[in-house]
Structure formats: structure tokens, C-alpha cells
Length: 365
Image 1 (spheres, rainbow, N blue to C red):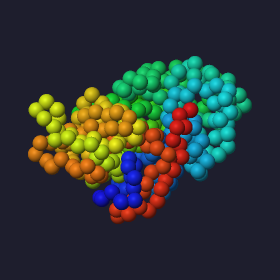
Image 2: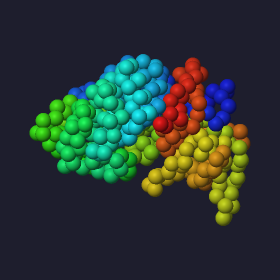
Image 3: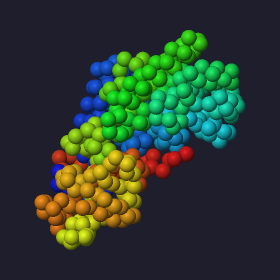
Image 4: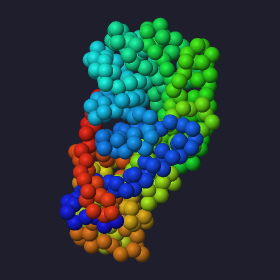
């Protein structure tokens, strides 16, 4: 795709045709496994994309924060899961009560103390919110061991909360060679927790798992739904993990060559782009080959980022771009890039067709 001449750089561009293809492909793959799709919209934060996902068959939306839930409920979403172990005090409880008047709301939980505090804060509205226990399936971030699920569920029930399910985030799947292992560990952890809770008398109706690397691997685990997010766009991490191909990348950052250097024996051959960390984000896993990738130049490497500079080391055998050339950059972590801009350019067939506001940008609480 040629970057439209009307675009000033740096600018996030979304290819609507690729986006729609990604949405449809994931919906079909998940449906074929007998699972529900509840995409994580923290990736894009855009109501128009959520509408596309729901139209393709998603049963509801996943968010990370109350603020994100408020944005998407305001835009008509009727089934929202806040997949985060919220600490709910009086102010958060009031926001949850207002949300519950607009949509079905479920929230994450991973401790007895959080359950008791949430219930006390919700007061008479305690029965309006569903609680889903977070299970640690190997990522070792938040979440409880499967063996602890019954104890936390009983504490929540005594406090008056409705425990309806369990969820996990197999975040350790975001590393080379790990998606299959993480999917297997997810299966074991969710299965064990569900069995224990069911035996203890809890009606577990929601068993939620899946990240973008593992969503299509989830199956035969007792899971009822998966919550991938990055799949709508793809990013450089997914490219390197081979969980998507170059033709699946729906979001790129248009950038201009602002400085050019042929290099010497001691200084690398390089160009500088105007897409620094303030638009790309600074994420770089230890296994990644750079701070992003150039979609049309896979052998180039982004070796350093400043706020407004991206240093790109260029292969010796390839022609160094000219000053003023415009290149397409794929961020390492697309969720961060989307949270850095107010709006994005939408193209179809290489032509600008729309601009979308990143409505949930900055809604971090």
C-alpha cells in the first residue's frame, strides 16, 4: 500500500479491508471450536471497531478498566467484562452501579479481601454485578492458584457476590516457542479450578481464556470463551512469534525519513524516521529484534528510539531510502501505540475513507 499523499507523518493508518478480514477470520476460527469470542477492546479503544467485532458474532466485549467500560457502554455495548482484579471502593462502586443500569457487567476478582471490600462498597447493588475469579495459569502476574479458587469464591458468596465464572490470561504465550505450552497450562488450570468450584456448588457458566497467540489453540479445556485483542491489527511481536503474517498487519505508522547516513566502519548505515517513542511506544521484549518492524523492509532494524526519532539500521545490500521517503512502521505493541493518539486515519483500497476517534484513550481508571 502507498501512503496517501494527504497524510502528514507520523500518523497511524488502519487498513479497513485487512482489519475486517482479521475480524472475520478470528470469529470463524473461534466459532468452529464451539467457543464464544469476547474480544479485548483495550487494543483499539475505538467504538467503530467494536461494532465490527460484534457484527461478526462477538458475544460481548472485554475491557481493562472502568473508564473503558463506560466508553463502550455509552456507545451501546450491552455485555462487558472488566477482566481485571478491581479494588472497588465507594467511588468505583457508584460507577459500577451506573454501568449495570446500561449493560450486563462482570468484574474480575482474585482475593477474599477484594471480595469483601467490593461487596461492602456495592451495598444494596451487590447482586447486580457478576464476579469472575482470576486464575493464574502460568503468567504469574495477578490471579490465584486453582487450589485457592473455592476459598475465594466462598468468601465472595458470604459477602453477597454472585460468582459466575473463572478467567485467566496466558500472557507467557507472548514469547518464542511458548503459545502451545501456555495454551496447555491454561487448559489444566481452568479445568482444575472449574472442577473444584463445581464440586463446591458454584454454578460456573463462564470459563474465559485465550490471548491472541493462544486463542485459536484454545479448545478441549472446558473454556466457553476467549478474549484476544491484538488480532484485529497484528503487530511486530505477533510477526516475530509467527502468529500473523505481513499481509495480516492492519495498522501501520506512516513515517518520513528525516535524516540519512551511509555510515562508516564504526558508525552504522542508517536512516532516522520521525516516528519516535511518542507514537510507537517503547516496548521491546528481550527476544524482539528491534523497537518495531518496517513492513516493506523486513531486514531493516529499528535499533533505538527517542521521543521523536527512530533509528533504523539498514542492510548493506539494500538501497538506503532517500530523505523525504515515507515508510510504514509496525509497532511492537499495538495497544500502546493506539493509546498515544487522539484519532487515526482509515484507508480502503489505498484511499482515505474515514477518521476514527480513539474514544477510550487515556481511560486508565
